[in-house]
Image 1 (tube, rainbow, N blue to C red):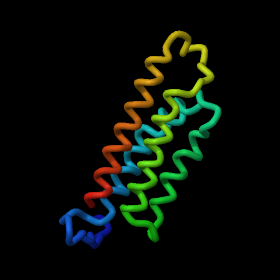
Image 2 (image 1 turned 60 degrees about the vertical axis):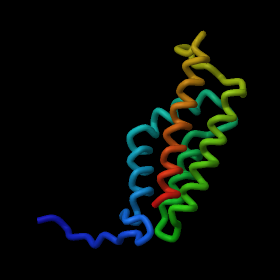
Image 3 (image 1 turned 90 degrees about the vertical axis):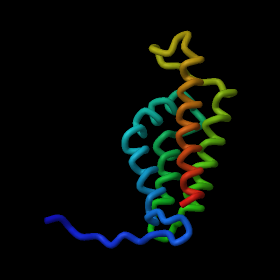
Image 4 (image 1 turned 180 degrees about the vertical axis):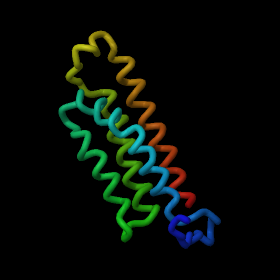
Amino acid sequence: MGKLQTIEMNPGSGVPKDTAIRLTNEFLNRHGSGLDDLLRRFPGVHGPSFRRAIEACFAPTEAAPELAMALDEAVDTLLSLQSEDCRPLPADVGRRLQLDAGIRWYAARLHDLSKAARRM
């Protein structure tokens, strides 16, 4: 039999308290390496540092509003990269539009997680 856990519910939303953190952590575990790979092309942003800034909000002392703010900042940073020059990898020659689409995809997912964090 597994370890029993007490799940604390948020009385305002009826959702377990750590749901926003769990969802964001699962997203970063699944897609974080792709995000790091995308960010390697932009010298002004260090991928692992970008992720660590979000993951810092997973600490027990942090709450969903802090996570939402960190995610909003991440979205703003990603969207600002669309106007910056990048160092394309050899596989990227002539594919700047695909890089921009990747940036928008990650920004949209992080924005969705930010909205979820605000509601939880």
